Image 1 (cartoon, rainbow, N blue to C red):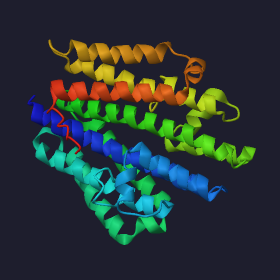
Image 2 (image 1 turned 90 degrees about the vertical axis):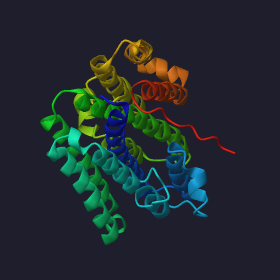
Image 3 (image 1 turned 45 degrees about the vertical axis):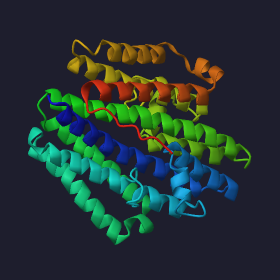
Length: 320
């Protein structure tokens, strides 16, 4: 397969998954902003979300204050923010259009329809009227595209490069979500949250990853931060966990490997082995923020190596 074709398929999938994960993060932040808490904690939570995407400086160049409504508008519908949901869906559609002949008609129509309907919903003001409904719609459309991909595509290189983009994006985004929310938990401690408030805080995080019911099946008792981390980092049976995402990356790399990809496979296997060998106690002893920072460095280095070897090399822009 040509590197350019693989690149379009890879990024089509990454942008679709990124839109979904952005919707998940915004939804959990919006729900938490409805909880009783200080104005300082609310601002810290939304600032942390911007920090997660490394967009704080860009946001502040357009807005003087950080509020839930302004951040949501910036992260959903701003065309000046390339990481906004609307820009991600547009980028996914443009990448799909460039290689339309490589995929089934069903997959192309799913991605194209999502982009067209997203524009309508933005114009209708759905985000302002019912933010949660809009976020659920974004997640549903991503689920649908993924289902069409799995249900209609031939198991060839096209199929696997789409999967590679999906799992790498998920591996990155879920770690960022966990990092921000565990750091933000310290902000809430100063607000003297009740047990009920604390339950809703961690339950909202689990629901943002579609893992609330999974948690109940595995642990069957009160929601505790350490167990949330264990489920979302180390549980192979949880499809959105870090170890599950990395395991899927390794599986896809085994399908597309060639004579020159040994170093990439080694890095991916090394990261997977570390995740499988660790216990949640060891992670908390190290510090969950420190662990996730190191993990994100390694997953982004792996992503860069994959781009250099299989795709079109990423172009780094010098900041002056």
